[in-house]
Amino acid sequence: MKYIYLVPLALLFSCNEKEATPEKNEKFCLNDDLKKKVTIEEIKKEPVSETFTLTGNVTYNSDNVVQFTSLINGVVTNTYFSLGDYVKKGQVLAEIKSTELNGLQSENKSVESQLTVAQRQLSSVKSMFEDGIASQKDLIQAESEVKVLKASLENIKSNLALYSASPEKSVFQIKAPSNGFIVAKNMSSGMQISSGSEPLFTISDLNEVWVMVNIYATDMQNIKENMDVKIKTLAYPDEVFAGKITALSQVFDAEERVLKARVVMKNTNLKLKPGMSADIILNKPNTSAESLLAVPVKAVIFDDNQNFVVIYKDDCNLEIRQVDPVTKNSEVVYFDKGIQENEKIISKNQLLIYESLK
Image (cartoon, rainbow, N blue to C red; front, side, top):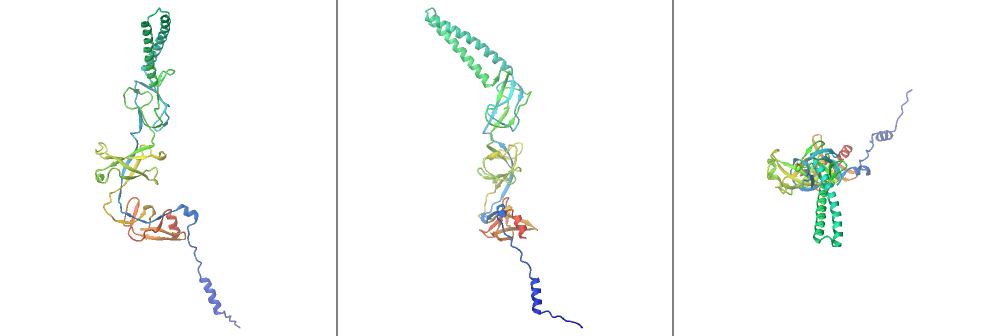
C-alpha cells in the first residue's frame, strides 16, 4: 500500500520565501579612527591657471655670511673643522705657523724690557725733580719716553691678539668670528697661505637661504620680479615651500646659458641645505577670466582608464563619482561638470574609502 503525504501549500511557499530572502549588507561608514586619517575639502571655483616647473638649487645667503681672510703669511699646521660643521664664536678652527709670530713675540719682549727701564728712569727723575736736582725738561722727556713705549707695546699686543697668537704652541690660532655653519672651506693642513688671498672659510647661520632659479629663454616672458613661487625638493617630496622672486638677473649666465632668479627663503628648522636641487613651480600669467571647479590633483583617483572622486555627504553617505577633467596643472584639476560647487570631497587617503565602497 502506498501512502501519499500532502504538505500544505502555504507552508511550502513560506519556507521557500524565507530561504530566498538575502541578508542585507552592512552600510559602510567612516568611524572616528578612519576619519582622523582622511582630509575633507569643499569644492570651489577658481580662475584657471597653468603652471610650469623650472629647476634650481639651494645656496646660502651671500649677504649674510662671515668670510675669513688671512692677514699673515704662513703654513696651516692643523684644522679642527669640516665643511658643514656648526661652530661657535671664539672656537679655534685652525693653527698657522708663521715667522711673523716669532718677530712679534721678540719685539713684544724687547719693548716690555725697555718700558721697565724707562719707568725706573722716570721714577728717578721725579725724585731728583722734587729735590731740585733735575729740570722740568728732564721730567717731561722721561714721561714722554714711557708714553711712547706703552703705545708701542699696546700696538704689538693688539696685533698678537688680532692673530690670536698662542705663545705656548708658537702658532697663530684662527678662531670663529661668529656662530654658524661652515658653508665654504678653502684650507687644509700643510697648505701655504698668504695675506690677502681668497677667504679660507665662510660661515653662515642658514636661517635664511637663497634658491637660485634657472630660467631658459623660452620662459623669460613668464617670469617677473615679486612672483610667488612654490618649491619642492626630493628630500621632502610631500612638503611645499612658499617663496617669492626677489631678484631677476638681466644677463645670461656664461656657463649655463640661463638667466638666474633669486628666491629668498626663511629656512625653518634648517630643512633647506646649500647644494640641494629644487623644482620651482610658477603660475603662468592668467589671460582668461574663466573660472572652473577646482579639485586638488591628489584627490582624483585614476582607475581602469577613468577618473573618480569620492564625494562626502556625511559619515555614512559617501559616493564614488566618475568625472572628466577639462584641464589641470601641477596642483589642481579643473572640471566644468560632474561635480558641484560646495560639494565635499575626500582628498587624503581617499583610496581606502574608494576600495571599501567598491
